Image (cartoon, rainbow over all chains, first blue to last red; front, side, top):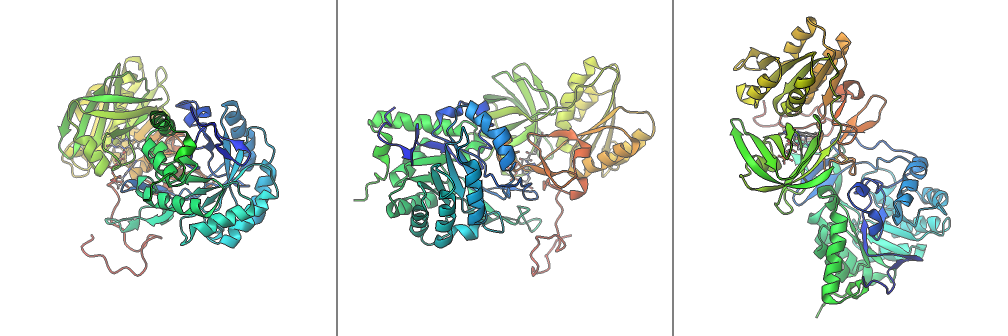
Amino acid sequence: MSGERKLAIGALALRNPVLTASGTCGYGLELARYFDIAMLGGVCTKGVSLEPRAGNPPPRVCETPAGMLNAIGLANVGLEAFLAEKLPKLQAAGATVFANVLGTTPAEFERLARKLDGRPGLHALELNLSCPNVKEGGLRLGTDPGRVREAVAAARGATKLPLVAKLSPETHDIGALARAAADGGADAVSVMNTIRGLAIDVRTRRPRLGNVMGGLSGPAIRPLAVRLVFEASRAVSIPVIGVGGVARWEDAVEMMLAGATAVQVGTASFVHPRAPLDVLVGLDAYCKEQQLAYHDLVGAVCLD
Amino acid sequence: MRILSLHVLHRKALPGGYAVLRLGGEPLEAEPGQFVMVRGDWGFSPLLPRPFSLALVEGNELTLLVKAVGEGSRRLAAVQRGDTLTVHGPLGTAFRKPERGERLLLVGGGVGIAPLLFLARVAKPSRGGGLAAIYGGRTRRDLPMAAELAAAAENVTFITEDGSAGEKGLASDAMQALLARPRFDRVVACGPWSMMAAAAKLAADKGVPCEVSLEAMMACGYGICLGCAVPTPGGGYLYACSDGPVVDAGRVVWEAGDVEPVASAKPMREKRRAAPRKARKPEGTS
Ligand SMILES: Cc1cc2nc3c(=O)[nH]c(=O)nc-3n(C[C@H](O)[C@H](O)[C@H](O)COP(=O)(O)OP(=O)(O)OC[C@H]3O[C@@H](n4cnc5c(N)ncnc54)[C@H](O)[C@@H]3O)c2cc1C
Ligand code: FES
């Protein structure tokens, strides 16, 4: 397919612009039972922290109009188990692996980056600067440009791996967050993480999630994500990865027209395990029909 | 597991908002206890597929028992013959295969009967042991597929809370009586959380192994969202869709309460942690 002209995150050339979104594909291996995950541009793992985390009390998910709320609480196997059990299998599957890492302080991001640097089978890091579901760090760190720059710089000093900074939508100035990430040394930014929401059961008068609030995802948030991608891509020269409600190939094209160099498919994988592949196949067919390369779409929205 | 596009071959509506669906078109190999994620072609709302236990799989046909409780299940319960559904499965763990001579006691409540019926139907020919069942519900309308169960198990006790069918009481009352007499080698329970909790406790008290089929809110059904957490002793969680739904009852912290909010959830007052502290007195609740 026509993607030759530079589709890259830092030094990492991507096969194509369709990735999975962190937290919606497990460690990637679960999807490998449904299709060849090496066909994707990348697989972005569940957020990995230094220590294992059990996660939040249930219920952790509930459906909302054209979307869902989740408060998983970053349940994950921890860095050691990720390296010992998950990464070798991802490598064997031939996947382009983006390890999503979760820290609450710049020092933690530095340690995570140091420990992951140079690991065979690992291609890039995505710094989760914006998880809405943990009390410490997470959102607070991710909405302050100064802290974002610090956290990215801390990781940058500890690894040569391409770095992607995943940004929070809970800001009035996504451009400032994107610039801060770029200043800190990020090779790309992912826009956006989930945005906090709340759903209440009117019969029981209880929140529908054990954690009360959760992150909203799915088609419902796509217009917000497209707008933020549009703004972020005009603020920085590094690539923007569009995330938020991409479920069909048309959504990927829309994200790219808004300014995304690549996209991540998230909640759609819950609905259909082959969703990321279907998005890719549709995107390729569209590009072929229109005789376009991927990069021709990036930021190509007509504004006049 | 696979993603199938199946046709509705037959739909039987039952009183109380229940429907028995027979789907077919492609072969599926599954064992009792496993479930499928089901969705119609209805755009982005409802978005997520919904989990349903397999009530029977025979060749190219599978049977589901659906209770309409919300938007997704209401749509499924109302499908028409010829409609197409996307069915992802089989998913999750199955009940242990009954051993020769093993005596099973099945304890089901409401739609929880579905996987037990599947078990009873395939266990019967190879049995040699025994297959008793207790089937409980609120009223006689809440015992869907009772006739099918009566045909598949040799000794069925029906019990309703209002006494409108069978004995009057809870499934756990009937279980207490049955466990007092002959020895069973295993209890297999599926139904509301409170019923399974009671079954787990009674079985443990008698030293009888107990398997349960868990329900939890699920987004994906195949282990990628980590949404279906159920508390385990020791402070962690198991995942109902991939570690379960069938697990040994001892792996669950039953006191953690209703992780399954379902229709059985009672109106809550302020005592719950997350209840709004300054909320006005509820009007018209209880
Ligand atoms: C492994 C498994 C097997 C199941 N088997 C059957 C079956 O054979 N027959 C059957 O009728 N139902 C079964 N269920 C429950 C069924 O999945 C839910 O009733 C259904 O998902 C509700 O969707 P809804 O859109 O109608 O309800 P919603 O509008 O989403 O919610 C309505 C009510 O149902 C509750 N609910 C939603 N999803 C679930 C869920 N996954 N589990 C429990 N409660 C839920 C909600 O909290 C709410 O109280 C099973 C659930 C699981 C996890
Ligand atoms: S429902 Fe997604 S992990 Fe169990």
